[in-house]
Length: 594
Image (cartoon, rainbow, N blue to C red; front, side, top):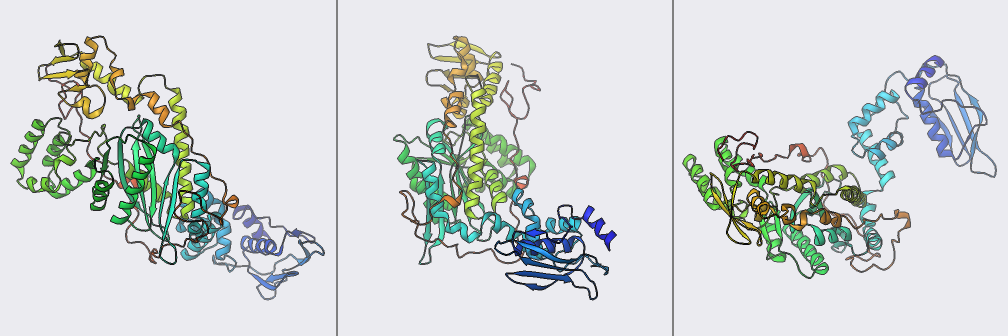
């Protein structure tokens, strides 16, 4: 048995000190009990507790006739315990199978705590496999699951505690980030959680001051103990990265909760700016979102996410040729081009007319949609939300919001540092597009009509450019906010710098301003006041105990898995030539005569 114990100590349980000596001390009886259990598991013998109380702990090997025995007693006048007697030799053969009586849920929780701290997505099946590999012990899936739940509660608190801490958390957020909005709402006589809305002052300032007037709206279902949904309104910064403006967690996705979310968003923007820009809003246009936008942002131009529209078209017709023509129609810059593509589609299937009645082109087609999308046609916020849902669904609600805050803080810091390193007029993505337009501009003949109007002639067509109004008849300049090749040709011909005619939201200065404010950390919850009077801006006072929603995750394995990012279908990318501006080939492969 001694040789076997040495082998186990060297390979299976390197973190447990297997030595016991008379006089060895433990801080308390619980530490003593845990240590002896760890040794029993490592040396593969069953431990039977003979006596355990406030003053002593006596245990022996459970095998009849084996002399192994330990007697631990409390030291007088101090809380420590020490080993008084010890018979350290085993004469039994120990536990021969993989199941061990001492491998309880509590032991599993202690064993995986460090790993779960680093990786909350540590799965029960991974836990039971790792315990078997590292300790030579078999635990059931339910033991692994319960052990993880207990470890998560020890590290992050319980789900129930998370809801109870929400009023204090919102108060701390408003206190550490002045000007931010953080409010929690409860419902019913039991004060069950209903809604949480958070928007940081740094995000509000960045959006109003420097971002383009474009918002994406979407949601992700939460798969935690009490389910719920994560709602988000996100903008896009100068370099085309997502910029979350407002986040909400609601007990259930519903028309009523979307109406509330857009109401909070409208109040937030109304308080912080006198001149509300005319927003372009993109979403999947569910009925609840459409009604909420029409109610609270009546002047906004609300368009479809192209991913959603294209998937519906593809699934409806299941015709590759028709889908390819559809994408050509989507990106057609003029109504004439668009209608010609519709005519091509109708030759293949007359049913496209009925489909266009369900999805009017005015809500998604480049030629007809009146909003300015700045080359953003699909919802990038969808992937971000599903990432958050995957990373946070096992965390209590306060830890979930802290995870999101930490990620936002990291984005702000990294992008602020990156912006300070740039020396160009425009951000890199805009610089690249302007450079391509300037390169293509040399292919055109420029005729100047007056100080501001130019006629740009090519073998394909003639376009009219007005550099004062920043308009080109091809509509590219108006739609994307950057001078097209025709505009670049006109500007170069009169000695102007095309970079200076981009929309201000594409400048490095705007980018730096977007991330100029800080998102400040929130103190540890041990420093919060859970009782007291609520601060202004919160919908729940601190003396109200918020309870979890009544909706709970049903038992058993979920019927549907959380949608993973790699499963999000992306719309087919249509290549457009920068030389002749036709679709289907790149500038390098262009064979059209100019």
